[in-house]
Length: 69
Image 1 (cartoon, rainbow, N blue to C red):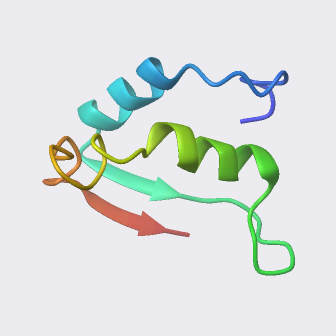
Image 2 (cartoon, rainbow, N blue to C red):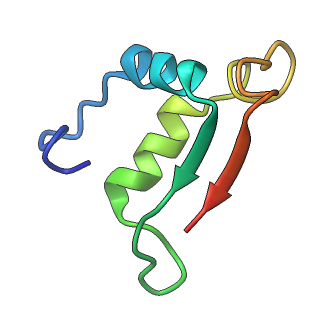
Image 3 (cartoon, one colour):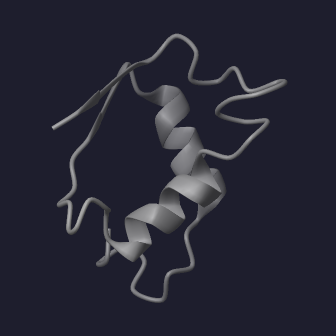
């Protein structure tokens, strides 16, 4: 992810589109002191936002099977 977004400017629309097209989503990232790296944390906050990934109107990922590795 750091090679895609070295300036931490995440292309939210592109990332959300990739998630909508995926049948299966596997999240794999290192965990340091019970947390993920800052860019991953930012990705979660910006891409998986309320109203899109969850909450009222947040249905694009409803049929997806999330998993972590």
